[in-house]
Length: 248
Image (tube, rainbow, N blue to C red; front, side, top):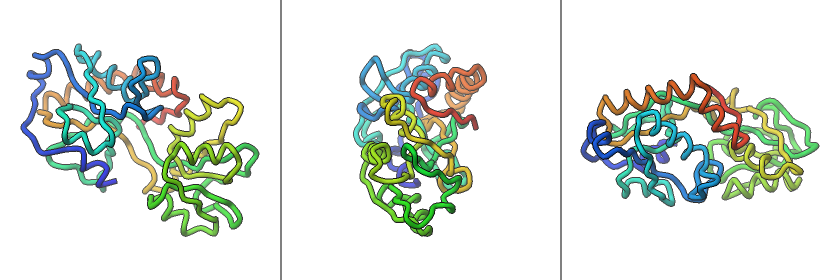
């Protein structure tokens, strides 16, 4: 998680709120092909783009999107925001980055296939269960301590498809990926169990990472987020992608 958060950001000069207001635009870095998170398709932009756009609108600004693949290329692009930055005290944030207030709780849930027996926690995984995990992830380390059989995957889309098709019993996966799968595949839905609630290493708040931000910009983004959380707008955005909204 440290590497994922630290790599996108280079130490550069601050861009104050006044400069952003003068140009009438704030920018975000995002992946063009990563639904439900982000997409360059106007009809389904993904919740990261929709939240970033709502922040911009609250601030009276346009949103510009810099498309990047992979995430670490954000250091090569002149964008102001990166969505879903991990906001935990045990995850070090580079000095050049300021975090907004958190707007959602994310993590790695247990997701079960149709008709499969569910368990409430990672510790309840039993011998004979085939559990899909992302290779070399923290979830794979936790699952390795149980009697269950691990099945490694390289991509979450492949993992959730294997769960839905009955190739494995359960997977450790982002609730967002599972929810969006259910939205697009109503005949092959999977069951999300928030087992991350009992595993501190698999649960974290997410915030907006702000590069080059002065205190005024942080305050403006925080004000926009607080209003969007309080009036239910962020919850509605997640709902459109069938993602459980978990308010910090």
